[in-house]
Length: 225
Length: 225
Image 1: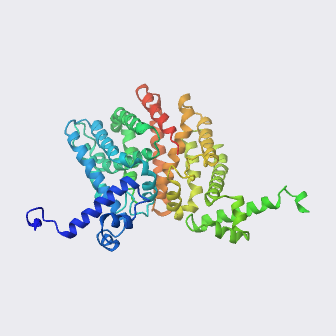
Image 2: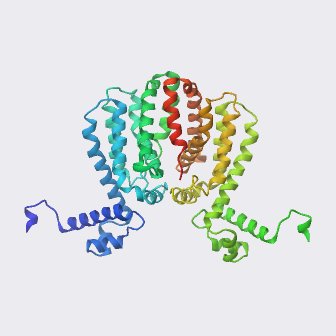
Image 3: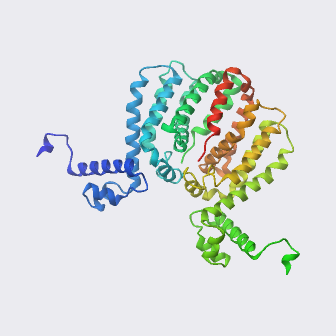
């Protein structure tokens, strides 16, 4: 009755959306290991079969979490990117707003890491399955690089976003290990890394460094799960 | 009867050594996931209780594996370190002989990685439990740095070995993901990284870069599981 006046949402879509929301809350509150399809079905008031109809496995729900996190990342980063055209500041914005999104999951981060780190895991951020959420991050880094006043040589502009995604994953790895209050150590690593980048960026134009740097970037940018 | 003329090995020590050897072969042939205390006990012809008496868990046996691998790493690296006093060549020796030891485990590497990557895992290479094998690698990098003709500023010599161990772990992470034949991609990454290091090493003496570089190194060298 109401469905004709509100958004065109079918019962099936509402069920799917409810399962998804409950799963995402569960990942935030219980972590990866303790979240089960059975629990989610119970809390959504549907059968395990219905849950499986919408999401074939727990890992499909983690992909929904990845998407949610990276959409929030984009929403946080884009307004800030409008405020500066300095390359290193723009990269800092993408890195920092990325870390911000991870923060609520820190206590469960080792569980997610163990589940996702294998190159054979569909949860690996570099897997084919993770492409939709990864592409959001690649896009943010591409925007950060291409919208900067200080332009890079063309071949660096092309390949840097993929390498920056790897740098972001390494920063996230450091963050998982970070036992300091409020992960201030990770923030410091990022600040110092960016400062060093700012100082050494002009070196990219030094001929003798440029070729080996580009070759290294080529190799790194091709890492796939 | 023979024990008085051969090495002073008790029956208990022989049992321990046999369990250890069988476990190490199992890790190489079956990987981490399929190796169980039950299987090892069976193949050693002892009870599960006896196995547990010598090694409280499968992970204690993985620590034996770590030790075996790093002792072989040291045996392979040290004669080569005697042949050159060039810093970058010496680092290359430690990195390359380290990768050589890992090679027989490549098909099982994702399993070991999943089991070891959590900062809460005793198998983490940065854990307290892993200190004995890690210290061998720290020692090799210290030897590579301190025995080089081109000396580094004192504060770099002190902290670089720990940072180099992390670099080695990141290289090993790249190697786990490396699907190229004979892991040639990892070898190329290492070669190119070393070439870039050789070219940029003089920059360590540029005042404006030295301080941020040292601060970055300080942070990185303190990473602990």
